[in-house]
Image (tube, rainbow, N blue to C red; front, top):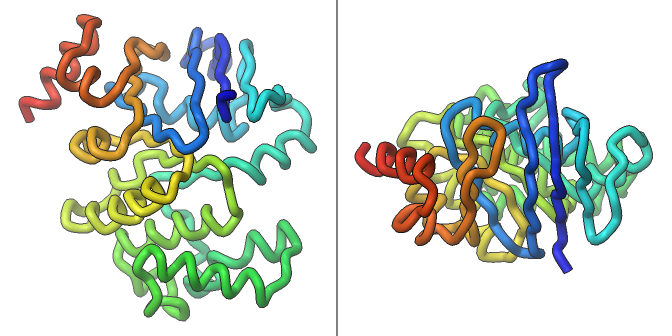
Length: 245
């Protein structure tokens, strides 16, 4: 049974169709990476899944239950189970690293402060920030701030993690420290959707890679198939260009 099913999904910004006929099943523990040119719909698909852009047609099912994106209670349930990390860190600048990670589980979910604090410290240690609990965001590098954002998402105990270009705003030397944190989550069996231009990383961690263009999934398969033996001309053209650079 797929953990997540996407069936004939369509999304639009007013009259501009940005996703169409998206069909994708994701098994628990799978890592599906979305690649493709800018404007192809990769980030939009993540926004639809988390409920930031309601679909205009099709359906999304989580553990065989249809998600009603117009229902606020269903949306809250969805966001208990799926978390997203954006390109921008969006940390609270007036809060310490530890406070940034604990605020949502304690204030939104009402969990005990002591329990959440202990869990937050473990998560921050996991992403290599055990010495930064009491630091403020402006005292951290971009890579460190992005790792705080990942720990903050994990503090919500999601079953599925969406990662939207989480390294694209970073200086090149900071990219690997964020990717190492994602590698750790992958090794632990976290189901993930990853939008990334880091093609070596995508090839390394992905169960499957979906190439998107013009709001469509053009081709999907194992990293080896998509990068080394794509069957669709549009995929061949894209992969050929990126692998030459």
